[in-house]
Length: 379
Image (cartoon, rainbow, N blue to C red):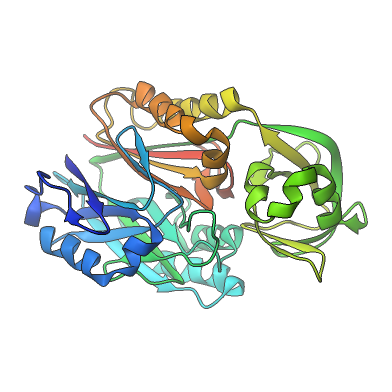
């Protein structure tokens, strides 16, 4: 397995002195960039010209990861040549958030299942119910096929997200790469690092991914009370104060991030389901624990790809973590590097949601505010 990675700039094409020697032999290209960069069809054309035989998948972001660097409004292009691993790409258009489950199921059924080992998914990031998308993918896949990936981003703007799926970028697209055969080894891990505070409240009124009431009170009013002066910057400020969601008081928690607020309806729309009858609690950042969470996610990957043997690591971290860590954002990427080793190429992006099993033997779930890592190597 061979990897080459280049930084492309929206105003100048390829950076001077880059290496595109893989050329026709590359089978897969991952391209993560700023929304403006993906809007330009000429940039997709440049990638296609450099790698004419590759499947191209990627998306707009809230920040791009290349090596140990985190950039904004660039285009990180990572080309992969496999020694003995077939890859297939499939995509589907998402009509609206209500179509998420069916879109996931249909997408999973589009790819051949024989010898399928893993599915890597990049989705529309705003007009989607990520929880339902993941449920649909699981419904359409064999039980032994894990799914990782994430929802595309648009900085802190939440206006439009775009996805590459072997074509110029469009909104409303969900794309997937299937990895096939016995030679590919894949590890994955997902961890948070946020601290819960305040009382645990029951969700008394919700519909899908829209929350109306906690403990029979306006959820938006309660949320604003906790945010204080940060409430004026909603929904972007909500990235720093996610909800800790539990189906029962003792079940494993998942984080949920707000995508939009509706003052008239006094509601909040989240990236994933907010089931009525479940429990929710506010969370806030703990700087050291966020970095430790990234390191723990990398350690979990070692169960699939042993430490020091990964060739590629794809990092998908939440935009909320980026807003909290600010100038120290590269600390979490460096923490991953310390675990996966210097031999691994690192790429990825900051997202509106992360897709990964909570544990290697668990079911795939949508997460928010986590660092999710997928590592690859060939035997």
